[in-house]
Image (cartoon, rainbow over all chains, first blue to last red; front, side):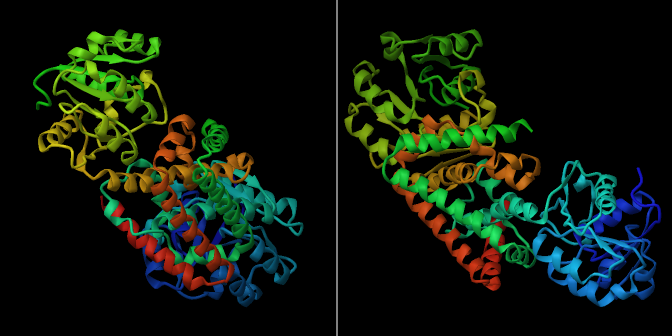
Length: 285
Length: 285
């Protein structure tokens, strides 16, 4: 399976995700270089065979020779980085990212990009509760979803190129959504669930209950250990979609609350029946 | 390990929980009989060696000879059943239950009970997403918590008797809580989490997202297939405690919502840090 014929890949940002991309692509035979401000991350990645070469600064030569660039930076700094260094990019280079929000960065980046460069936005829906290149492992891509989120500025070839990246990395399912569809979906299945887990943990001091928690509580709070730098940024960048989902959810919980307060047993049963019915679609998968 | 020296156990209500008690106690060598209105449940239990004998009606002889009676009925009908048949109970018999709410039934039952009979309330915190005696399996008790919830009407001996029942059945941890402590705890770790899972499923038609759900969404909705008869009754019987926890949770979600709406990144980070810190107590366990 081929992704690109030329083979110099540059990964900018070498954390858990950048490192996992590096590991997977290196294994496939690509020449992988990386740039990260953290010297120790570069050293770790070289010593453990995740990359061929790395730099704790934006090495001009590495940028110039890259046939493809993958941005695995925090979303807030990608645009700035590209603005500053795109004059060094190879003619016609293709770039992508790994960012968990799309609308708020995709259009801005495409707008200021050199005409010969195509940015194909994508989001690997994989993650772990640990962080850093030391925990990088492309095994986490198996069974996970890879979303390509193109705009009308993207070409058919660019989209195919990006889908192939997901395929060679071993993702289970490759989908194409608009940036807006992506953000609405991610606001619901990922961001709302994280707010719920956090709120369940912070709504009262529950640590004395540690001896009594069963599977239900453990399942609902598994994601309650959360990287506050990354997630606060993701929430903020997807503010409108997330607020809508939070309002829907809070409204629904409040409806259930009022049914209980009014001793409306049948009303509660209706909600439970709908829940069981909808859940069956998800179990079948 | 001994629970009781005499060995005629009567189980009233032969569903998932009653059947699992039967299976475990039979294996330990007790003589186990059961009463359930459903003929097919009795037949299944006899044919599969879960009980020695069973009746689809309140068999007078079975009730008279029982040395211990375990009520595994829906909470709403336990009191009525005892009221109707306690004149048949053996002198000094000990009884317990498996009900997931305590305050609203325990005092009522103890109040109308014959003076020579002791009712020691308990709650095996185990369950499965399936129901019925056909799914009974005492293996689900391993690793689970067993709560004894006595009042000041209970004796030291009665409480020890009930703790021993949990021990012989293989529960990981046996605790003693007041009915009120129990209900507050269960309202938080079990009932609130079920309301959250149901509300996440019912707050919008999300079935088109089935292809995009990852671990977070799956974890938070695992318990969204729910037996509406049992849970609506449990919620209703623990209304005050559950309403308090729901209000706390909805209030906390709303606070988070307002932080996001006001672009208060630091405020969101504070919540996430508290969540991560509290969650660490639960992970250690």
